Image 1: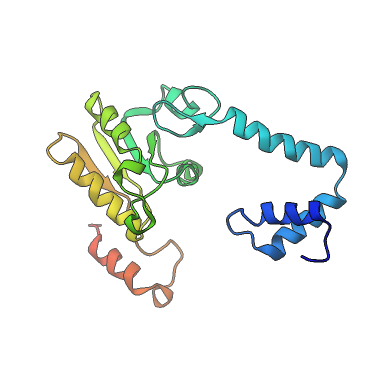
Image 2 (image 1 turned 45 degrees about the vertical axis):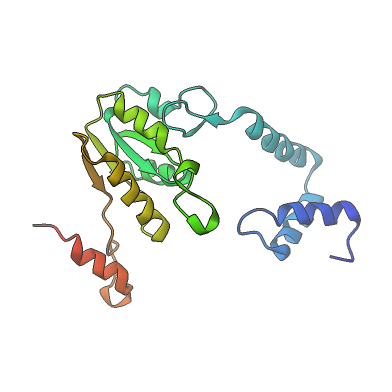
Length: 199
């Protein structure tokens, strides 16, 4: 990076702060930005500023939205009695893309990770409980990631919902469609057998 002028070094440094972007990728992106048309660079800069100014959390589910209530919570054709709890907005987007779910969501914006300083107070669990205590919820689907943090978060939510007259389910984990058993890891196979279902 020594060979670059200070503004380019600064751009590379800022770009490399993005997740999944190392110094080499940041350098390629910086060079791409330098070669791009002024109009394209202006649009990129404006879109970054625009997203920071306009995007907020939905007051119901905490999804990212431009309005007070996101389009999913606003959609009356969706089953308002089912809440699918996810860790991040991108997980919610993935479920939406599948097209198989027609309830609502609750975005935690993280998962329990005590060693990283993420405890229950850092997740939006109080908001989830307020929604449930408000009545009308018949099922909570826990769709946290099938990793250590996601499992710990799922167990905490299950504990919080104990004694409530609500069906609590967990998304299935196991062998992917089109998968070959000999290439599936031990933990996935173990979970597949544990959560087997009748035919």
